[in-house]
Length: 209
Image (tube, rainbow, N blue to C red; front, top):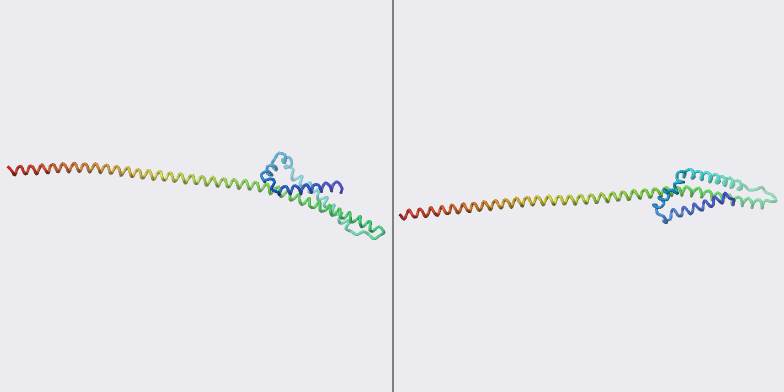
């Protein structure tokens, strides 16, 4: 295998390892998000699109070259005394071109897969943050509503207590007034009784005379 195809095969193996790590639950979306927004990754983040499409262009060139080699060695050789040797040599080159085609094709495919995984991880973490914020806001709203209801109940109870106390004070005052009125009536009745007895005694004294 030549140097360029060795490099592409190594790149494919690195992509496979990255995909396995990214889909495994080893690291949480939060850690991936922090890594993608870290200073180390920020060096490449500004030019990520340029690197991606540049590498994709290089891989596409190798893919086209492998397709050309496949078509070239798929043509059967002309009959001759060296037909077997040339046929075996052509089959070996055809096998290599097919191998290079699959390596390059999978490398391009996994490049799109990794890019999509990165986007989905970032979106997942951002949605998780939004969900946590919504849940926290809902909990704060529920707690505020509970506090408002409790305060309203306390105010209602206080108002009811004040109304009952006011009515009780009015009743007590009315009772005191009635007691005073009864005492006055008793005193007035006593006065009229004494006057009545005095009048009776006076009338009896005049009858004896």
